[in-house]
Length: 174
Image (cartoon, rainbow, N blue to C red; front, side, top):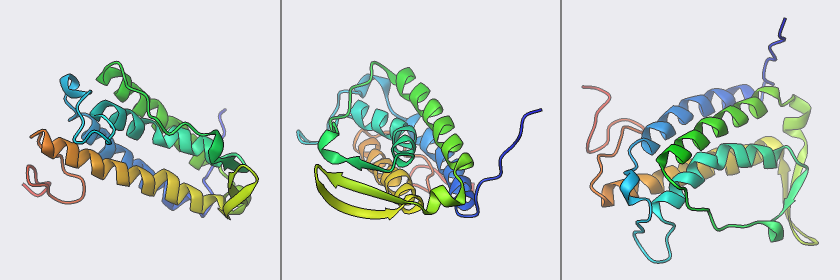
């Protein structure tokens, strides 16, 4: 018989929020036109495909990172890869959501409150509780890029889905 773990008191609200936001994010990713993955609104911007894949993988990558005691940004590659197609993006999102749910579900209260350090080589940039890192770099960072995606969709004249309340294209109240 499989044991079902109850999330810690700190992680349960975050897990519930994450599940709601994962559905919203999937809805936004499903609007990405497959034939426009190379499009950029500006030369210094990520392409639509890079942004979509980045959004799809944030939960997995950052929940894995948060399980460590810290991270050295000098070891990071901040150049998102280009996906081959939208199937890759949507599959990555599906797996990413599963990975993050597992992390949030299994994290103990002790792990959630443990200190996590961001380093740049030998210099400590900050130390925060792991739960605060998950809030900022998993959730808030994810929402930031999803908002960026909604602007890309608008610029491409793709109907923007409902995110919170109505968009100019849809209403959850109709």
